[in-house]
Amino acid sequence: MSSAKKIGLFACTGVVAGNMMGSGIALLPANLASIGGIAIWGWIISIIGAMSLAYVYARLATKNPQQGGPIAYAGEISPAFGFQTGVLYYHANWIGNLAIGITAVSYLSTFFPVLNDPVPAGIACIAIVWVFTFVNMLGGTWVSRLTTIGLVLVLIPVVMTAIVGWHWFDAATYVANWNTADTTDGHAIIKSILLCLWAFVGVESAAVSTGMVKNPKRTVPLATMLGTGLAGIVYIAATQVLSRYVSVFCNGSFRCSICNQCFNYPR
Image (cartoon, rainbow, N blue to C red; front, side):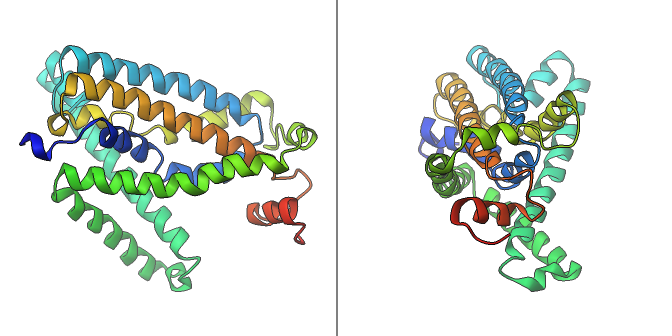
């Protein structure tokens, strides 16, 4: 690939953070808020693990940058390991892409009720997957642009929630909502970890894209660490402020709880 078509640090960081904050930022705040403020321990443990993995990719990219990331590195040990890693990685991505498509259709069904029917929903999901497949076929530059634009659009409401939402923050309510999962603290933390780990799928994005990155020995490590750190900070800020609004006494939906707490709407 010519250097003119390769992406720099900003775009590469956007790819890493955007891949991690795609469906996760849409799914996790409400799900983790239902567990309570104790989910912060799940975030801390998950972020430590994600940053450790990001550091491994960063070091590998510094020493021996290769197109394919984890697939190429496993192949250095043994061709069989490389093949196995590649097959599992692509299958995981296929499943993940389907989950993202289903999530998108689920949110679109709020505006287009016809998507609540299985047949239109299935067609819409397939269409979404193929649209983004076509974008990927256009090359890395288009992918990085789309991902960066998507990241900015996602960050606007999330950052606003994380900042403005603290205006209604109340320590007493936060403590009362510390564990709303109807289980022990240990089980609640484990449950939150399982959800939080989904948020960091995509930490390998920069390493996998080494071949389309300018100066990969510098760009890939920085983009991996910066993108992972940015995603972690935004996730914690957004989910913790939202956990204050899911009252332990509210039997309604997550949305109704927010409206009641902030604007005194009826439950």
